Length: 128
Image 1 (tube, rainbow, N blue to C red):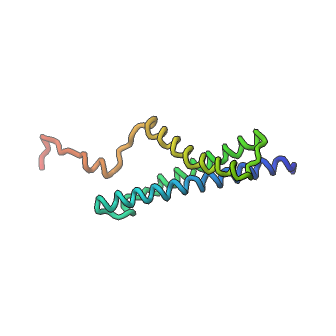
Image 2: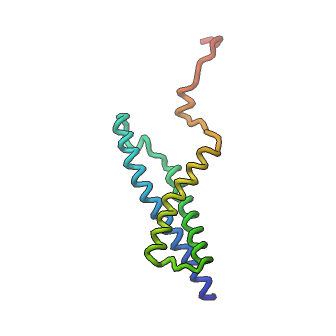
Image 3: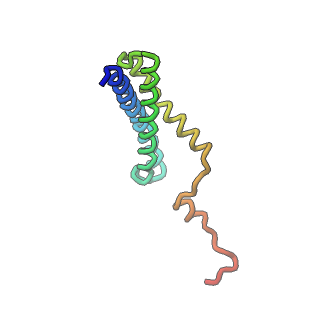
């Protein structure tokens, strides 16, 4: 294959990896915050942990990092420089945060099973 194709693919893969690393930094901070909230509510961290949200965040970070890698390839920027790597790490951290915040506001709120159980009201005319 052409060397340019491998260069672009390398930039995309490096960007995806750096995006995930940036997101993992954010995950560590989030786990610390959830641990503190769990302690305050006398819960365990595992009760507050949401694996689905973690994997969704990591998937978004892969996409954000890969896009940053594509942009670096289009701009003919050396993604292997320290400044470029830090920029992609920052994109993985803040870009994922931005996308998740946008999705939270744009998508309708779903009712979780725990919220549903709390909000269930018995009918007034129900026969026991």
